[in-house]
Length: 222
Image (cartoon, rainbow, N blue to C red; front, side, top):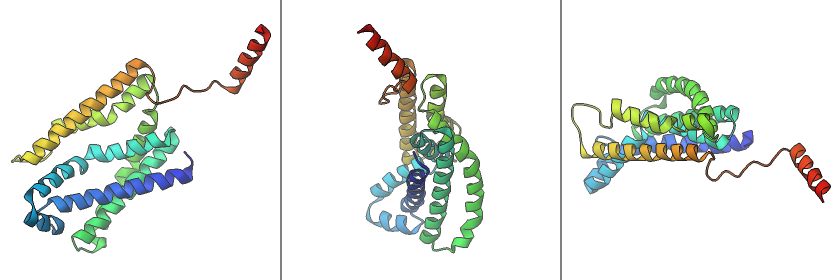
């Protein structure tokens, strides 16, 4: 993937993810502008929104964003660049939308935004490269492919959705969805590993020199 295309893919994806996360948080809360209006119409809609909020506004999901764009970038160097760009755009969009929905000056959110930009710079470099490496077969592909599923399961064990003194049905649903999804993803990665080839990836063509030798050998036999 060329750098221009990398920017055109990573930045919009990151921005959309960050903006959607901020909006769904507002939408799912009865104490914020969108959520208050929704609860007056349908508590069930807000419950669904809360489940979605618990799925996207968590560390493993943001890590998954960087891994996903790294996978699209195909090479570790470009994957690292894509990971940083996606997380930077997501963070900026998240706090920009937050300031709008909360009707607060954007300057109030800039301190946290810069902090998470710094975190995203470090983690984006690593996770983007991990995403690119996940395309590979063998042990490296296995380990990098398990990064997000294992990370999600660990977060569910250490800090499950709705972590706190009380639990709610939405948190239980989010926990079940993540655990089932992460387990299925890990099983897929193991299946790919044991098959020895990534599904959907065409077998690489031999280098030109090899093709020339093979062609010459075929002509000699004839």
